[in-house]
Length: 426
Image (cartoon, rainbow, N blue to C red; front, side):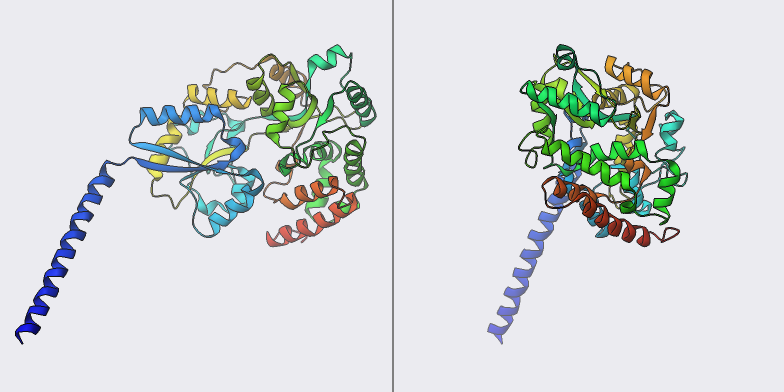
């Protein structure tokens, strides 16, 4: 009995010692947690992690030592699918840089709604509020404004070779031929980053397509493969590649490679958003650049994005109030001036004081203010996942699909998405 009692006593002592250790560690952990800063996770596509944003985040952390911001950079080609996956399994970060269309596609129930209780709400320019709202509700701090997509070109090269800005594909091919003879890359292509691949087609498509055709496409009255001009446009792009007007390594080339080639004066043109100009000028401030509309059928219409970008906050975040504080800080005129200027966007808030640069003023004066613009295809097809359409265009340029096949595959993908959304006519 004595041995048995001693065994039980020893066991109890061991348990008490263990409980004491655990309790001590728990108390220490609580003390440590109390002194640790709040970490806000902030997810964005990798190409949105710009140095000017990093500078603003460091400034915020310096002014708010109780908070740290942890950037989660996602490869652009994986962005849409990964955001959807994280939302589906409840693993959203505290904050996310997201466009209205993707937010709508993921579901507004995943995000915090913002209204007049926010100090920045009534400072937003009305048009910048409207183009980010979903059914009259706002689910993020507006950070993107009007920007343009087109062909950025080296204006110094154009002037030296006495080249005029082309307005149709025949003139464009003639310009490319001349540039090629000069030993330059006429049109840089970065198709490893598949988000850059469809920009040429997208700009042509919105120039051609009238509202009634978009309505018919969206209501299942006509299929994409039944619009002959779409196939013609895709074949026009293939012809540019076959003629050797792009860099030979286009399937492996990246956006960053395009910036380097353009900054070095090796490439004369590149299809992208106006943010590309800022990236080039950081590499080479002496480079003279301008943007032209993608030339198609003498339309001379500039493709614009009205600015669907927002910083949204997850409803599942444990740090919603800290995220609100960050958004309030970020919305201040001086901070938004840095951010919008970094992207070469127009101001988002009424009290911003930023001044447009010369090439941006040219686009505003000659296109935007004159309504010589068309909305980018992502805004026309808001909430539609175009990843497969992009990837198949890349396959087409690799010679593994025809233009017809690309459109037929897109018909199937598009129909599936529209049916899933319960759209009228599907």
